[in-house]
Length: 426
Ligand code: BJ8
Image (cartoon, helix red, strand yellow):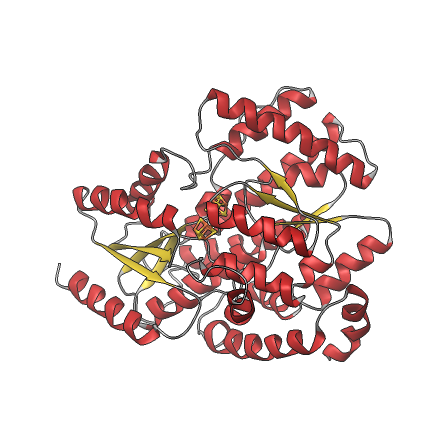
């Protein structure tokens, strides 16, 4: 089937043998980790298809859009406002950074003590196996953690990348700085697309972005049920796919899924054969196809009921403040919404601790797992404070540091099982 996409991949300059190799392994893990689960909602069929067509049908849609004069913008981080991109008539897509497949290549260039997410992203560009990057007309990086920031400089030697400055604090000066970055990004987008971003177009795009995130929050809320109507891996998959799908279509499908989940929850239909301990995972973002931790946790008998992550609540919770009618007022509202993201590259970042405690309460969790990628200093340092806050609140927690490989699977499994054992004795 994939052969019919070879000419498209060739046109984009994709390293086809490597992509084929990656797709083989990826397809097998998708079947084993996601599709083999039982009691899945019917509405997941759409997201399964989207996943199957990640390198084929979705890329064709994006290239068709470009052939009609449209532009695609690749992003790595939730700080880059998707609504500003949409308002320029362009399509935002999340770039590849969640697979171990490209890490060996990245290791030949990047310092070894770099997190897996950064290595994976760089390796994808080196090997030319991320179709989303190759179909993008503009790539936007951002000044968040040092690992990403410095990797982008090397990425820039492979292809052009525009860097947006994200402040390190969340005060008024930071807002002024970020607002000026948004104004500059507006000009960059207008130049690239040839479209003027009007106040009306931006209001529509922000409304769409808001409804997309509301749909995701609606799905999340159903997981408060005693036996959640969707398992943790499926919920993560939907959040991951939100970064690559068409916003309007995704919103409609996410709302359809939410409706089914609400009905299932009302009828007491759960996704778990035997409901286990309820866990919240907090920490580094899990980009597609990183399902390593939720898979291990749920295979051990627990239920993942919430994610405090940029592929989770950090993405869909920050709300847009009421916007002024003019463009600058709207940009300011976007600025405040983005800066409300509890990202550990801010100092201080106490909002994240408050969020984790709130989510732990709202989702009645029995324990929290802090997920940190090896060599990620921002999350590792915050884990110390978060651990103390959880202990004070009487919420058991487990800190796990890992990467994208399977090397530590057995060790992780033992630690997760031991943690679940302590929860069962409480
Ligand atoms: S808004 S969390 S997506 S920066 S895991 S690359 S922090 S060394 S991802 Fe992030 Fe944006 Fe913040 Fe969210 Fe660095 Fe850590 Fe690697 Fe990380």
